[in-house]
Length: 176
Image 1 (cartoon, rainbow, N blue to C red):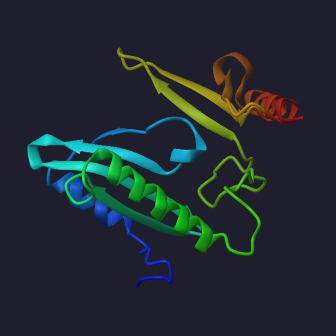
Image 2 (tube, rainbow, N blue to C red; image 1 turned 180 degrees about the vertical axis):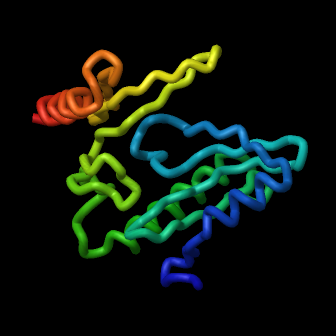
């Protein structure tokens, strides 16, 4: 189903399944880190003749995507221009009236699959090459400058409950 700006939701899982079944492994690289090229990636697969720019965005749980082929749009620059125009129309349509850009929401409640009951605290089991198992509780968070950080506490060293408590405290203190 097409929306008014002629963009189409794409079932990415189906697309990725199709691509992997056909041995399609794109070389993907963004143009730059600038906002000008947000959501746009380059796809080159010479063995199947695929060259162009891919736009992929997700808004309010709906995934949108479209491929802009170099051969259709007069070369790499023309395809990039059309990809940017499509992305901009899509953003204008999906964010109309919200006054918001990309969500900056951080997780405050555990997801359904979370088994520790604490957001950002995970039990890790690491296996060595010789088969030995090491158990940890790991705290994860994102620093104010956007860098993912983590710290681990050994179950062997602290015991299960104390390692969990330390991981919870470390995350709480790191997030302020």
